[in-house]
Image 1 (tube, rainbow, N blue to C red):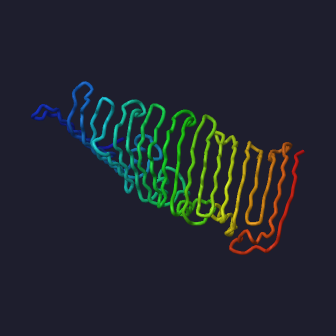
Image 2: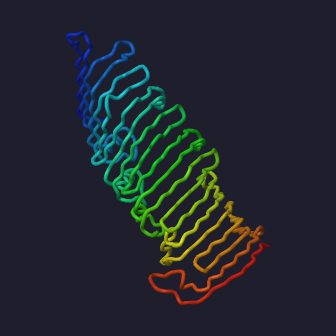
Length: 365
């Protein structure tokens, strides 16, 4: 970094013999100050300081020290802390603010590598989640809603323990509890996630996915990583008139294109779990689904597929080999739709009333 720079350090002794310090620094990048009482040498345990730091632009810091992707936003830090034998302990929350984003950290900050030994309460809040994420990554899928997060984090040598993490986005809330392992591929990570809210539509607006029926929802699942898999266990998605449940296992890395899945569900309104897809808007009809199978690179194996929508039914079993040879294909498909017009609207228009049925057996060469 280039430009004017000033540094002032004042050491003095109080009438009762305490060593007092005051430190001020100012440059084209930062302004900061700290004052308080020094602990005894050589470790200075017991040092207690009140401090503040102001940065006009994080992007300028990034340019000066070759740290890419820092946003062009100010940052201010205010707080007080004391140095103990086990780490740095805050004296009340340390406040961090960047424009309209505010965070607080309170607790013990460990001195081991990776700040292992830390035991912290954290909080974060701001008016626009989509805007916050867009500062660091290109995305349009996240909603422009106010958000907040609070909870406890314990940092170990190779893991983060998350306790009572509660996040809110708009009117929805999410609770997370578990541990994140820092090893290869996050192996050993286990998280329990629960989310609920009165308006699912505000979360998925602009996501590019199917527009589901507005209204409340609950969603829960256990997330587990091994060295070569990501498992979503006990997925439970409930709406007022429909529900889905299941399990999903994905091979890692995702480029392997391997997965196993089990999905079941039912309800009296298909719109609870499926909305408008490619201009087709499903009607308020009862449904059930029972699906189990595997994906292995270029093949799809179904142990069971049984979908009922009103009076229509789709069943399938077997393996579809989508590779060039297609030798392993052994697949049975049955479709029976008494009246396609009863299923929904295409771009707002009712389909012509007619039935459709298919009973096919496919075998590879």
